[in-house]
Length: 256
Image: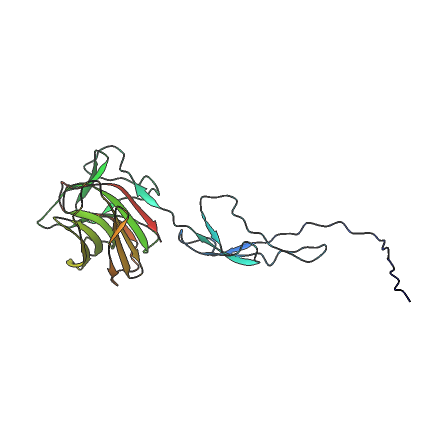
């Protein structure tokens, strides 16, 4: 016999949908550094009707941080902040006694030796003491893995300073002389790690330190790379100048 299809009509009263209650927590809270990875948990959220949470959605709605979620639809996820850059154009009043604070990041320049200043919107060593003096000035950041960049503005033995500690005897540095080199200074002694062509005024030098690997770029072109295991946790970066004639401009440091 032919099949018979029966349509059943259902009637009833449907309860109104009730908005869920979102409960979110973050760890660590408060954060200790600007690069802390934050774990976000929303699994304590509830939905009274119909009673089942179907999805989550994480959004960054306000604040001064940028970064990325591991999974915006997960009940638990992580937010990894992008490193805050620190930079300085030195575009402020001349001073023979201080470099002040950075334009971006408001970090205080702290000399490890000698007196530093600002001259015609460029950083310089206001006084150098002793033959072969290695004066450094640094800012304190949250990161040891870093790109430090600066513009070589006027002739003189000098360079960017990376992964310094609280003296002028332990750091990495690029060096501008008749040629150019990348050095590590440990306990007051220098070791050359790489050599590259001499710089000209206006050249942009960038040193990237990531773990034990270093990379040196000039005008965005890689000129040297290698490894060295000294001071992999040092977070102070800046400039090194050996003579009062040298000048540097447009300095920056960014975590990687």
